Length: 117
Image (cartoon, rainbow, N blue to C red; front, side):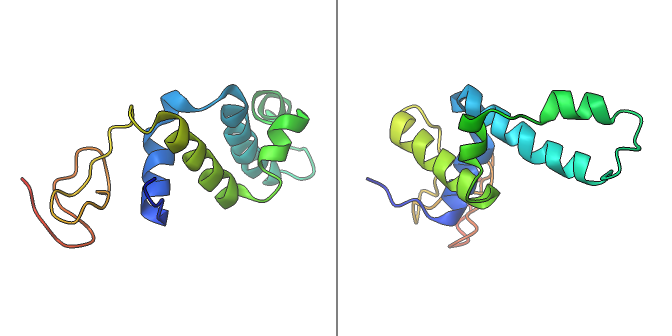
């Protein structure tokens, strides 16, 4: 099994939306909804009920995914996706050092500086 270092975890999380579960998608919405909702603690924003309905959840399965914080959620989601879909993931790895590029289309390694344009 490949070691999942922080940059690879971020890459998988950011570029593998098609492998998110319904609960993981709801957890992401809930996380960002708490940011939006948190700006208006006194409920004075005119669209606060819309925001609550669209983003926030009371689903215990979803909230359990976030119970150790969003960074841990990102890590756990990326590890699950990697474990279940390793062969389907299109990882843009450096041909020289084998580490992950910043984006799926990047042609330069952030670790060793190799350029494969």
